[in-house]
Length: 78
Image 1 (cartoon, one colour):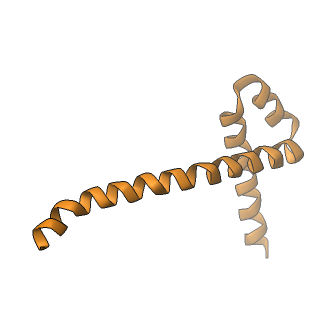
Image 2 (cartoon, helix red, strand yellow):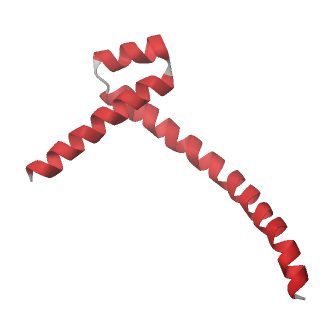
């Protein structure tokens, strides 16, 4: 009995991972859409120019970096 459990566990784990991948995919797309919406609302002109010139990934990376540093500064000030 333990041998069957030992043999089938990797397949059950693989099936679970595939199922969770399907569940996670729509959630991550919604998160990216929210990030882009926030980016378009709050981006400075340099970030918008990077968005047009280099694409979404580069511009969002710069935006997240700027927003993250701003949060760190605010947290340290309080």
